[in-house]
Length: 77
Length: 229
Picture: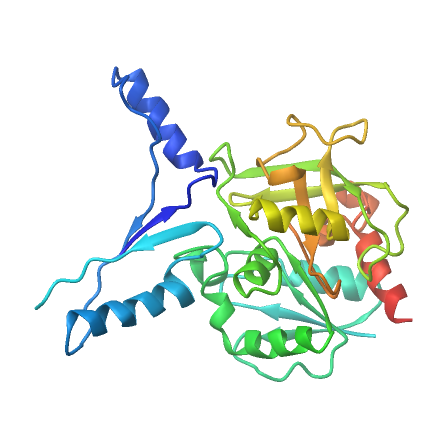
Protein backbone atom coordinates (compact mmCIF):
# COMPACT_ATOMS: atom_id res chain seq x y z
CA UNK A 1 0.00 0.00 0.00
CA UNK A 2 1.05 3.55 -0.68
CA UNK A 3 -0.32 5.89 1.98
CA UNK A 4 0.03 9.57 1.17
CA UNK A 5 -1.17 12.85 2.70
CA UNK A 6 -4.42 14.02 1.10
CA UNK A 7 -4.19 16.92 -1.30
CA UNK A 8 -4.81 20.08 0.66
CA UNK A 9 -3.46 18.65 3.93
CA UNK A 10 -0.27 20.43 4.94
CA UNK A 11 2.68 18.05 4.49
CA UNK A 12 5.64 19.68 6.27
CA UNK A 13 7.94 16.75 5.53
CA UNK A 14 7.20 16.96 1.80
CA UNK A 15 7.76 20.70 1.89
CA UNK A 16 11.11 20.35 3.69
CA UNK A 17 12.24 17.81 1.09
CA UNK A 18 11.13 20.13 -1.71
CA UNK A 19 13.15 23.01 -0.24
CA UNK A 20 16.23 20.80 0.11
CA UNK A 21 15.93 19.55 -3.47
CA UNK A 22 15.60 23.13 -4.74
CA UNK A 23 18.65 24.20 -2.75
CA UNK A 24 20.55 21.36 -4.46
CA UNK A 25 19.64 22.88 -7.80
CA UNK A 26 16.61 20.74 -8.74
CA UNK A 27 14.48 23.76 -9.61
CA UNK A 28 11.88 21.81 -11.59
CA UNK A 29 10.65 20.06 -8.44
CA UNK A 30 7.19 20.90 -7.08
CA UNK A 31 4.51 19.46 -4.78
CA UNK A 32 6.67 16.87 -3.00
CA UNK A 33 4.49 14.61 -0.90
CA UNK A 34 5.91 12.14 1.55
CA UNK A 35 3.97 9.07 2.62
CA UNK A 36 4.35 5.49 3.79
CA UNK A 37 4.87 2.22 1.97
CA UNK A 38 3.63 -0.98 3.60
CA UNK A 39 4.21 -4.45 2.20
CA UNK A 40 2.49 -7.56 3.52
CA UNK A 41 1.55 -11.12 2.62
CA UNK A 42 -2.11 -12.09 2.60
CA UNK A 43 -3.52 -15.56 1.92
CA UNK A 44 -6.31 -15.22 -0.63
CA UNK A 45 -7.87 -17.13 -3.53
CA UNK A 46 -7.66 -14.21 -5.96
CA UNK A 47 -6.15 -10.76 -6.43
CA UNK A 48 -9.63 -9.23 -5.97
CA UNK A 49 -10.11 -11.01 -2.65
CA UNK A 50 -6.66 -9.85 -1.46
CA UNK A 51 -7.32 -6.27 -2.56
CA UNK A 52 -10.67 -6.27 -0.74
CA UNK A 53 -9.05 -7.55 2.44
CA UNK A 54 -6.19 -5.06 2.31
CA UNK A 55 -8.63 -2.22 1.53
CA UNK A 56 -10.45 -3.03 4.77
CA UNK A 57 -7.13 -3.01 6.62
CA UNK A 58 -6.43 0.47 5.26
CA UNK A 59 -9.88 1.75 6.20
CA UNK A 60 -9.71 0.39 9.74
CA UNK A 61 -6.08 0.93 10.71
CA UNK A 62 -3.36 1.52 8.15
CA UNK A 63 -4.59 4.86 6.78
CA UNK A 64 -6.46 7.70 8.48
CA UNK A 65 -9.05 8.84 5.94
CA UNK A 66 -9.20 12.33 7.47
CA UNK A 67 -5.67 13.12 6.35
CA UNK A 68 -4.47 10.27 4.13
CA UNK A 69 -5.24 8.57 0.80
CA UNK A 70 -4.08 5.08 -0.08
CA UNK A 71 -3.68 2.92 -3.14
CA UNK A 72 -2.89 -0.76 -3.46
CA UNK A 73 -0.85 -2.98 -5.68
CA UNK A 74 -1.43 -6.74 -5.55
CA UNK A 75 1.13 -9.26 -6.77
CA UNK A 76 0.47 -13.00 -7.07
CA UNK A 77 2.75 -15.39 -5.21
CA UNK B 1 -16.79 12.43 41.72
CA UNK B 2 -14.55 9.57 40.54
CA UNK B 3 -11.82 9.84 37.95
CA UNK B 4 -9.97 7.15 36.04
CA UNK B 5 -6.61 7.75 34.36
CA UNK B 6 -5.70 5.22 31.67
CA UNK B 7 -2.15 3.90 31.36
CA UNK B 8 -1.19 2.57 27.93
CA UNK B 9 2.24 1.08 27.24
CA UNK B 10 4.22 4.25 26.57
CA UNK B 11 2.02 6.65 28.54
CA UNK B 12 4.19 9.27 30.26
CA UNK B 13 1.88 11.69 32.00
CA UNK B 14 -0.41 9.24 33.80
CA UNK B 15 1.43 9.77 37.12
CA UNK B 16 1.41 13.54 36.78
CA UNK B 17 -2.30 13.40 35.97
CA UNK B 18 -2.98 11.32 39.09
CA UNK B 19 -0.87 13.74 41.13
CA UNK B 20 -2.81 16.73 39.80
CA UNK B 21 -6.16 15.08 40.49
CA UNK B 22 -5.38 13.46 43.86
CA UNK B 23 -2.82 15.69 45.54
CA UNK B 24 -3.80 19.06 44.15
CA UNK B 25 -7.49 18.71 43.32
CA UNK B 26 -8.14 16.27 46.23
CA UNK B 27 -10.19 14.02 44.00
CA UNK B 28 -10.86 10.29 44.07
CA UNK B 29 -8.74 9.27 41.08
CA UNK B 30 -7.57 5.78 40.18
CA UNK B 31 -5.33 4.31 37.54
CA UNK B 32 -6.94 2.23 34.78
CA UNK B 33 -4.95 -0.31 32.75
CA UNK B 34 -5.11 -0.54 28.96
CA UNK B 35 -5.96 -4.27 29.11
CA UNK B 36 -8.90 -3.71 31.47
CA UNK B 37 -12.43 -3.38 30.20
CA UNK B 38 -13.96 -2.30 33.50
CA UNK B 39 -14.01 1.48 33.96
CA UNK B 40 -14.87 0.99 37.66
CA UNK B 41 -17.82 3.38 37.62
CA UNK B 42 -15.72 6.49 37.14
CA UNK B 43 -17.45 9.76 36.16
CA UNK B 44 -14.62 10.99 33.98
CA UNK B 45 -12.03 9.02 32.02
CA UNK B 46 -8.71 10.73 31.30
CA UNK B 47 -6.37 9.65 28.51
CA UNK B 48 -2.95 11.11 29.38
CA UNK B 49 -0.01 12.18 27.24
CA UNK B 50 2.89 10.03 26.14
CA UNK B 51 3.78 7.81 23.22
CA UNK B 52 1.27 4.98 23.46
CA UNK B 53 2.49 1.84 21.68
CA UNK B 54 5.54 3.83 20.55
CA UNK B 55 3.30 6.00 18.36
CA UNK B 56 3.93 3.43 15.62
CA UNK B 57 2.03 3.89 12.35
CA UNK B 58 0.33 7.10 13.55
CA UNK B 59 0.08 8.69 16.99
CA UNK B 60 -2.82 7.07 18.82
CA UNK B 61 -3.62 4.60 16.03
CA UNK B 62 -2.69 1.48 18.00
CA UNK B 63 -4.00 2.61 21.37
CA UNK B 64 -7.42 2.96 19.83
CA UNK B 65 -7.66 -0.84 19.56
CA UNK B 66 -6.68 -1.61 23.17
CA UNK B 67 -9.36 -3.39 25.23
CA UNK B 68 -10.08 -0.39 27.45
CA UNK B 69 -10.80 1.86 24.48
CA UNK B 70 -13.83 -0.25 23.59
CA UNK B 71 -15.21 0.58 27.03
CA UNK B 72 -14.19 4.23 26.71
CA UNK B 73 -16.00 4.53 23.36
CA UNK B 74 -19.18 3.00 24.84
CA UNK B 75 -18.85 5.23 27.91
CA UNK B 76 -18.55 8.32 25.70
CA UNK B 77 -21.53 7.25 23.57
CA UNK B 78 -23.61 7.05 26.76
CA UNK B 79 -22.60 10.64 27.53
CA UNK B 80 -19.73 9.96 29.97
CA UNK B 81 -17.05 12.64 30.26
CA UNK B 82 -13.75 11.89 28.53
CA UNK B 83 -10.70 14.16 28.60
CA UNK B 84 -7.69 13.50 26.35
CA UNK B 85 -4.43 15.39 26.71
CA UNK B 86 -1.76 15.41 24.00
CA UNK B 87 -1.38 11.72 23.04
CA UNK B 88 -4.82 11.27 24.64
CA UNK B 89 -6.20 13.86 22.19
CA UNK B 90 -4.58 11.95 19.31
CA UNK B 91 -6.15 8.70 20.54
CA UNK B 92 -9.61 10.32 20.76
CA UNK B 93 -9.30 11.52 17.16
CA UNK B 94 -8.14 8.10 15.96
CA UNK B 95 -11.06 6.51 17.84
CA UNK B 96 -13.45 8.92 16.04
CA UNK B 97 -14.68 10.27 19.36
CA UNK B 98 -13.42 13.67 18.18
CA UNK B 99 -13.41 15.07 14.65
CA UNK B 100 -10.19 15.76 12.74
CA UNK B 101 -6.65 14.49 13.16
CA UNK B 102 -3.26 15.58 14.51
CA UNK B 103 -0.24 15.55 12.22
CA UNK B 104 3.43 16.56 12.20
CA UNK B 105 4.17 20.08 13.47
CA UNK B 106 4.70 22.52 10.63
CA UNK B 107 8.28 23.14 11.85
CA UNK B 108 8.96 19.37 11.91
CA UNK B 109 10.45 19.99 15.37
CA UNK B 110 9.35 18.65 18.73
CA UNK B 111 8.17 21.69 20.67
CA UNK B 112 8.41 22.05 24.44
CA UNK B 113 7.32 25.46 25.71
CA UNK B 114 4.84 27.38 27.80
CA UNK B 115 2.27 29.34 25.83
CA UNK B 116 -1.09 31.03 26.07
CA UNK B 117 -4.46 29.65 25.06
CA UNK B 118 -7.79 31.47 25.06
CA UNK B 119 -10.96 29.80 26.32
CA UNK B 120 -13.46 30.10 23.47
CA UNK B 121 -16.63 28.55 24.89
CA UNK B 122 -17.44 28.28 28.59
CA UNK B 123 -20.76 26.48 28.16
CA UNK B 124 -19.19 23.03 28.43
CA UNK B 125 -18.32 20.65 31.28
CA UNK B 126 -14.61 21.22 30.55
CA UNK B 127 -14.57 25.02 30.64
CA UNK B 128 -17.54 26.11 32.80
CA UNK B 129 -15.26 27.34 35.64
CA UNK B 130 -13.40 29.68 33.26
CA UNK B 131 -14.38 33.15 32.06
CA UNK B 132 -15.24 33.62 28.42
CA UNK B 133 -12.06 34.66 26.62
CA UNK B 134 -9.92 33.85 29.66
CA UNK B 135 -6.23 33.37 28.89
CA UNK B 136 -4.52 30.30 30.36
CA UNK B 137 -0.76 29.70 30.46
CA UNK B 138 -0.15 26.02 29.72
CA UNK B 139 2.83 24.01 28.53
CA UNK B 140 2.94 22.00 25.31
CA UNK B 141 5.40 19.23 24.46
CA UNK B 142 4.69 17.44 21.22
CA UNK B 143 5.97 16.66 17.74
CA UNK B 144 2.58 16.01 16.15
CA UNK B 145 0.07 18.60 17.26
CA UNK B 146 -0.98 20.22 14.01
CA UNK B 147 -4.77 19.99 14.08
CA UNK B 148 -6.42 19.22 10.74
CA UNK B 149 -10.06 18.77 9.82
CA UNK B 150 -11.92 18.96 6.51
CA UNK B 151 -12.90 22.60 5.78
CA UNK B 152 -16.67 22.06 5.92
CA UNK B 153 -16.38 20.06 9.14
CA UNK B 154 -14.18 22.80 10.62
CA UNK B 155 -16.78 25.43 9.75
CA UNK B 156 -19.53 23.42 11.45
CA UNK B 157 -17.30 22.92 14.52
CA UNK B 158 -16.61 26.65 14.76
CA UNK B 159 -20.33 27.45 14.35
CA UNK B 160 -21.27 25.03 17.13
CA UNK B 161 -18.54 26.30 19.46
CA UNK B 162 -16.62 23.01 19.53
CA UNK B 163 -13.25 24.79 19.54
CA UNK B 164 -12.76 25.21 23.29
CA UNK B 165 -9.19 26.53 23.39
CA UNK B 166 -7.11 28.38 20.80
CA UNK B 167 -3.44 29.41 20.75
CA UNK B 168 -3.15 33.20 21.09
CA UNK B 169 -0.44 35.85 21.42
CA UNK B 170 0.21 38.05 24.45
CA UNK B 171 -2.67 40.30 23.42
CA UNK B 172 -5.05 37.37 23.47
CA UNK B 173 -5.43 37.22 19.70
CA UNK B 174 -4.77 34.25 17.44
CA UNK B 175 -1.85 34.96 15.12
CA UNK B 176 0.47 32.96 12.93
CA UNK B 177 3.41 33.75 15.25
CA UNK B 178 1.52 32.46 18.26
CA UNK B 179 0.47 29.26 16.52
CA UNK B 180 3.18 26.82 17.66
CA UNK B 181 2.49 23.93 15.31
CA UNK B 182 0.49 25.28 12.36
CA UNK B 183 -2.90 24.01 13.56
CA UNK B 184 -5.86 25.08 11.43
CA UNK B 185 -7.59 28.11 13.00
CA UNK B 186 -4.94 28.03 15.78
CA UNK B 187 -6.87 25.18 17.41
CA UNK B 188 -5.40 23.87 20.68
CA UNK B 189 -8.38 21.76 21.76
CA UNK B 190 -11.80 20.63 20.54
CA UNK B 191 -14.91 18.97 21.90
CA UNK B 192 -17.32 16.62 20.15
CA UNK B 193 -20.75 17.93 19.13
CA UNK B 194 -22.31 16.57 22.35
CA UNK B 195 -19.64 18.34 24.43
CA UNK B 196 -18.85 15.30 26.60
CA UNK B 197 -15.49 14.52 24.98
CA UNK B 198 -12.63 17.05 24.98
CA UNK B 199 -9.11 16.75 23.64
CA UNK B 200 -6.31 19.31 23.84
CA UNK B 201 -2.60 19.38 23.07
CA UNK B 202 -1.51 21.62 26.02
CA UNK B 203 -1.04 19.89 29.37
CA UNK B 204 -3.34 21.12 32.17
CA UNK B 205 -1.82 18.53 34.56
CA UNK B 206 1.59 20.22 34.26
CA UNK B 207 0.14 23.59 35.31
CA UNK B 208 -1.53 22.98 38.65
CA UNK B 209 0.72 24.79 41.14
CA UNK B 210 2.56 28.14 41.09
CA UNK B 211 5.79 26.18 41.71
CA UNK B 212 5.31 24.55 38.30
CA UNK B 213 5.16 27.97 36.66
CA UNK B 214 1.42 28.47 36.91
CA UNK B 215 -1.86 26.83 37.77
CA UNK B 216 -3.94 27.61 34.69
CA UNK B 217 -4.61 23.90 34.22
CA UNK B 218 -6.82 23.88 37.32
CA UNK B 219 -9.51 25.71 35.33
CA UNK B 220 -10.08 22.57 33.29
CA UNK B 221 -10.20 20.17 36.25
CA UNK B 222 -12.35 22.52 38.34
CA UNK B 223 -14.78 22.88 35.45
CA UNK B 224 -15.25 19.12 35.26
CA UNK B 225 -15.81 18.88 39.02
CA UNK B 226 -18.25 21.80 38.90
CA UNK B 227 -20.17 20.34 35.97
CA UNK B 228 -20.91 17.16 37.92
CA UNK B 229 -21.63 18.84 41.27
